[in-house]
Image (tube, rainbow, N blue to C red; front, side, top):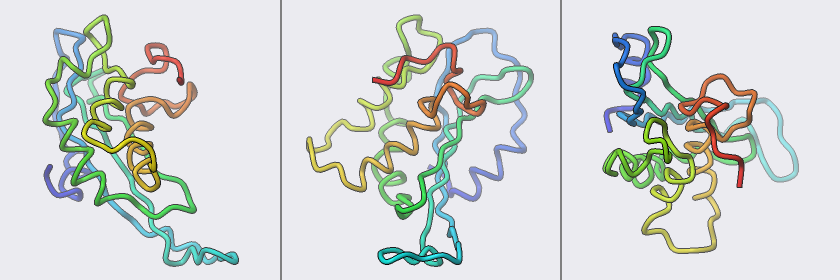
Length: 162
């Protein structure tokens, strides 16, 4: 995985042509950890020191002349999970056989298969911070809700939330 800043910067500059096939492949997973820097605090958390992870799942698909990229971020109240994303989960997706991440039609990503790939070689239970990292990528591939416009898997073609 390239440096996160390079990856995010290149998204705006990537020239792509309309693909002849509908098949979608993940070509990169970019993560950047940024401070929230909110001037609030409660009895447990000082949000001035809180961070968040921003993720872009970059595909080779082009729709309406633009590369299809899904975006996700983790919520307030949890620190960014850049280490887990960059060291374990993104490499698993990039190293996976691209066909193993496709839905039954073979022309789009399958969020359940992506989740299973990310969680391979992980100990069951005790998900803790791991769930935040996986959930951030999961949001980017399309499980963030039917009203999301920026997902690698269009809402009409997503599997229902399990």
